[in-house]
Image (cartoon, rainbow, N blue to C red; front, top):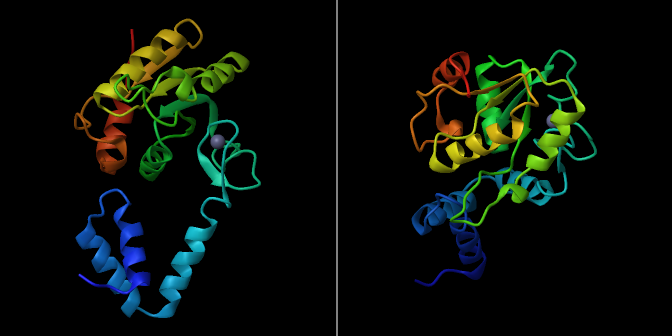
Length: 201
Ligand SMILES: [Zn+2]
């Protein structure tokens, strides 16, 4: 099908996004074409600055605004700095924060161990986590990696690393759907998993 180059270019770019097939990409592109100019200019501005205006917190590796050394959670004095919840992705932080039930801080691993994909401990923010644990007085670490094979393997690995260094290492309670992502679980499920967390032995 012949399409003018600018719209084909947009469709091609949109189709490269996860979960967006060629059909959805075409629908979105034509939607943007028909909608008021503000929408496309707002989108293009947001896209243009997403890489330059976002930085990673130097303590927990969650995303934050560029120019800040620590994210809002790490710099919040009301949060318990000795209670660390380990997650795979920044989206998991958002999922946990939405429950409003967690008062500690986070550590974002930037993925999970996966021998198949060639992701080893050195590819994750594990060294940074160990430095953080060794430099502080962490009372409890909650491992909240996803309930998947990779998430479980990562939890086991971390437990081995943290043994003897932290008083209490816990894992979110089961109840999260196996193979599902934390980010897709609803608030109540996450809240229950958090409340029912169990010590890893
Ligand atoms: Zn942080």
